[in-house]
Image (tube, rainbow, N blue to C red; front, side, top):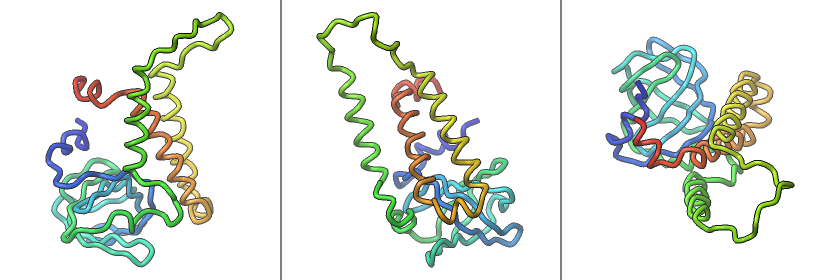
Length: 187
């Protein structure tokens, strides 16, 4: 079951995808987590040890903090609802230079440009077209690389913004590979 996709229609605020490291504190579990997406009212987090459904917690990152509770949980993932709204842009890495709205606009423009036909004939010297499967494979490889690099605290502290760029690139590849209308019809 894809809880994230199932919850999409129940959200009051749009989500911003990110790859941000933070600290979580709760009664049953505390430690480092990754914030994978966030809205003004909640977030998706990943970590080794996460609190139980309904348990209150606090997220802390670079002088920012927000309290909330766990509303759903899977192994290594949990959905949070915040007690008060946050400004999502404050939680993004400083100097990332990219916001999700720009990413979404770029993807939309790229998809619209697909409708433009190329009037020049193809020759046998041209490379074969890149398929959706190629894009999904590249996205998975970027995600695996980002996850592997994120396991090293030294890499994370030195290259946090660049790790987020890998995550955004992966998301772009997936969005181009599987347009939203096709993704929702396959659910």
